[in-house]
Image (spheres, rainbow, N blue to C red):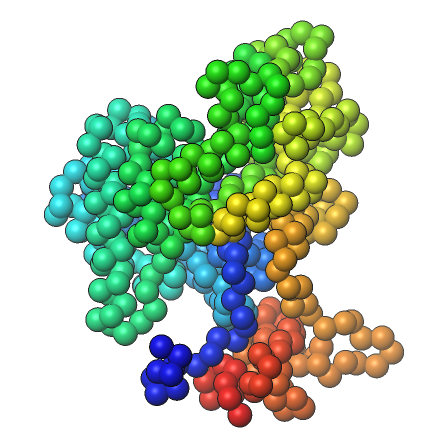
Length: 453
């Protein structure tokens, strides 16, 4: 295959791709959070994640993909324009949700012709809005009143999507669309929802939702996303952890390089109902809703940062995760230390990478946690061994820096560096980013790429 590349005129990519994926979700409802919690694609660092999944679109009564929010299409454009800054960034559109509590997938998968209509719509919609792929957010096939047959119908949908994406790429001579899914981590749901060995080969990656293992729906405190079983976990509770969940997916035939470990940027809260405040303590519902996320039962990491300034923070050694208490409020969450432990486990088990739920619940501005923007995701990125992100050139001291000034007044895009052909500039919102080609290559402005001299 390598010998064919020059004859086909295929150009080498600008940067070597990492062997691991760091996939980050963003939600279109985060724009409605007040003040510093408001998040739109303009808040995204284009060099932070390898993939960004825009959540969420739905399926209309004609079995076609349809936006949900009034400004979704505007936000599609803003998100996908970030690829002008980082050409290696991939974007996917997530489709799912519920209408009156029912998944729109249920009616769509019921008949071959309705699945075909959805697939045609998906291909057209993704190309029209410049997405690189599709994310299926039908997270619980066979659940919520849907028939048992949905397990098999989900397999058919996945197989048919993959085939259609291959045909589209071949017939139109373009890069094949990516296909991914968010899938359950609970064993009972996996059994009811997925034919794992049949769907795994057709996905580019699978986001296992290794969070929400415990929450305020339970009568005692438990951690949202523990790495291992704790001493208080008995019976079926013994499987409510990352180690058990991923191991089960692997035992059913999932390819490890396809599985992405879920990293939450939020914690689950409880209202303590006794004098006990440790793991497994009696609880009665959730703590008060956070001031920005405004939903009882969980707090975004930036809300937790405010909480832990005056609280008792404890570490659960058996599960390698922290929790914090103050008064009757209890929250189990993730921090940099727990992320590091999970990355070590992920690496040891040779998984394909990580997925983050969500970008908009990390401290994306850096104004809450007295740290850099995106402290959790940046730490995750570093822990996974990704190279340093490109940064803007240093600020001028006594005299103007001509490189820093290069992009002032220029449109966003790629530009040659006449002083050094092995580098090139990227302009984004008036900032200058200096990039280096791979060894032996130089930048060609005619193709906006690095190629042989």
